[in-house]
Length: 378
Image 1 (cartoon, rainbow, N blue to C red):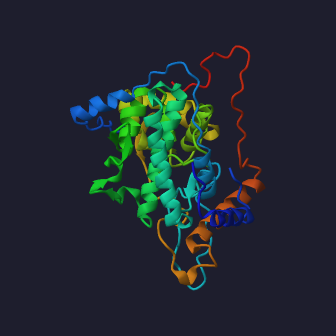
Image 2: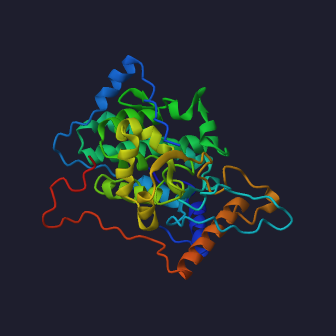
Image 3: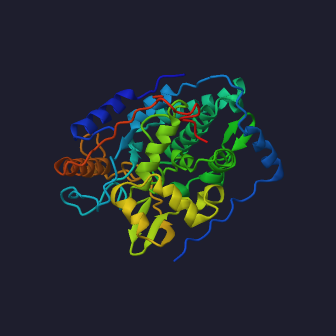
């Protein structure tokens, strides 16, 4: 493994964040089944079916955790309120940075801080993750270890490709060798070329029964699950996914009650063939496990579910665009400064209203009567 370059700039960014007072941490349309891969590709992907051999082999992702801690900013717990805006820079009415209604949900990456040297290191790290599968039998690892591997590999690859194409407003506009990013097979594991969608649907969704896995995959979009500030770890992946699910489901980009209808993210229609074949019944049961507070009551007060919510804008502190240098303040991009100021206002409001701004999670604790499979993602 290697040390991340340009760490001076990253420590500066973290100092700026700390100085700003930012805490760290009608009927729904049925989804069509994913397009079938060619028979040869399907046969090749069959090799990734989990077959644990009982050994307790663990993989270390501390290098990726270090990178995520440097570049990712958590926007804090979902507040379900209109974002608290700040004034534009003097002399302009431009709104720099993210403008999405959901911009204070989830988390953001500071792509303005990821220079070409760091991107090269991320690409090299992705290569190292791929090479791991040439030295050890990934399919024989404990299931949670396999899941953490696929989640981390997918997210590293997405950060790499979005970073290479930044500035860009929407990741869905990225093409790799003429193929849309989601479908581009630029990841190679055990000699098999894989796309981000292959990893999600034909490996993880195909072999894990828990719908919580959908919250582990970062799409680069504000409307999708948030990228975490730590790598997925086989020992804690169940609790990590549970936290990601709770954040998403309880945010307005996940669920929104409007009259007698519960509007939900379109993300659920993509997952429906795998986890919600009876869409409304299955999704209601899933949401009920994660909704909290008023949203728990709202779920029981609706008679319909419609998958209508999604935001394709990039989950980037600068909104996927470089600010006009005229408005830049020192080394801090003006768009980044604006969203950090909005986030600080959100946290100030939460502290005044005594709304918790963080969560504490205990993991790896075994209680009397716990099953031996506790903490394993099915």
